[in-house]
Structure formats: C-alpha cells, structure tokens
Image (cartoon, rainbow, N blue to C red; front, side):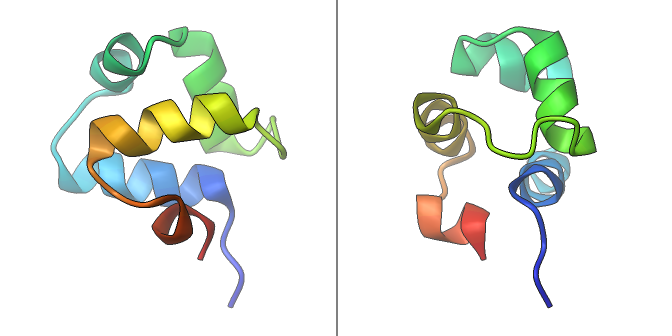
Length: 66
C-alpha cells in the first residue's frame, strides 16, 4: 500500500502529540504549508521542507516516504 508523505507526516505528528502549529513553527514553515502537505494538496513538497519536518519529528526521510 502506498501512502503519501502528507499522511505519514500527520501520523508521526499525532504520535508525538504535536499540533500542526507546533510542528510548523519548529520546522520553520508556515502552518498553511504544513496543512497543504498533510491534506495532499501539495503532492510534492520541497525536499528542504520534508527534511526540516523529519528532523523535528526525529524520523528518517525513508520513514516519511514509505
């Protein structure tokens, strides 16, 4: 089963009990950008953005793209 990066980000964020606002602030992105990624409105987010998110969530890029 293929899942989107956005749904993986949302899953890991919820596991860490973080709000979208908290994750966005810590990753240095806007809440609007994060919401678009998680909802799938942005199918291919910038790699720099995904790297920042993965660092905050303490997970690898591979885990986000599985």
